[in-house]
Amino acid sequence: MKKAVAVILVVCMSLVLFAGCTGTKTEEPASTAAVTSTATAASSVSEPAESGKDANGFYTKPLFELSYADQNPASLAISKFPQDAADKIFQETKGAVKINTYFSESLVKYSEMLNGVCQGMSDISYMLSAMTETTQIWPLLWDRLYPEGAPKVDKMTAIYQELLDTVPGIQEEMEKAGAHWLSIDATPGRHLHSTKGFYIKPEDIKGKNIGATGADMLLYNEIGGSAVKLSTSERYTSLQSGLIEAMSTHWNSWESNKLNELTKFHTEFGAGGIELQARGFVINLNKWKSLPEEYQKIITDAYTECAVKLSDYDLGIESKARQLALDEGEKIYTLNATEMAAWAPYATKANDKWIEDAKAKGIDVQAAYDKLMQLVSEAIK
Figure (cartoon, rainbow, N blue to C red):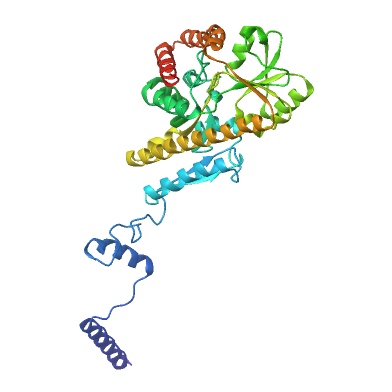
């Protein structure tokens, strides 16, 4: 028996030695083989130059995956631009940054867009700067009244972006709240759309109920009218019932809310409007700080470009809506510089109130406000 075992051992040892001499080896598990190929990739021309990338240099899996929340349905033409920005970011970071878009308030409700970003429910969102009115001062710099009138929305977008880039307080205040501004764009200018007639002199507003939502409320109240704050869904029925006789809004909203069915008189505050609010893209601050600087720049550039496209789009819609009013035989009266001057003291007083309120809270916005008015004045010359 012992002799038989000894023979078997000799045969096995011979086979092992034979395999070693011929270079034959046992196949390794897949996971071990992957580690091996990673270790030898630098010396092998047939392997990708860097682990985790394909032959074209794209990451096979994103390094950063972000969420983007938007209130608009994906089917709207305006929704194309944020999606284009996300696609551009993915391409320019070579797949390192992927942004998943959530439209139709499917991730965060519109009223909670800012809070959603600050609290990390979404990483990026697009919102009206006026959403900060109860918690921040600086974003209301973009919600001023323009005593001399204003340029069109595309030029105002450039002005607002310049202020974002050059007034440190705007970004600092937002970052204290837990978010970071990526870009800003202007909304089209507000005019008065009425069921009754024109408002050429400020006195024409006295005793009248006017629908409004922003700093224009201060204007109409200061004159002696009664500003009624209305949601988008309330505007049509309020005009229809006679609760208000005019709505202060831009041409785009006038058409999209079907106010053309009710209002037949339009008083324009110059070409650009008495007030142009702002919208912007914001990103969660912690997420922002986690990104490498090169990716931060790519993301900022993409959303800045997106803001310009949005304002250009609005400009085209504004022009079409105004033409619709003319085609339907409605009457438009555009206030000239002399007529605008009569409204200026009321608009300035409303702006001064914001400056005083900010000062009472320890924030000096005067220099930034003066710069805004200077840029607007230069743009309308």
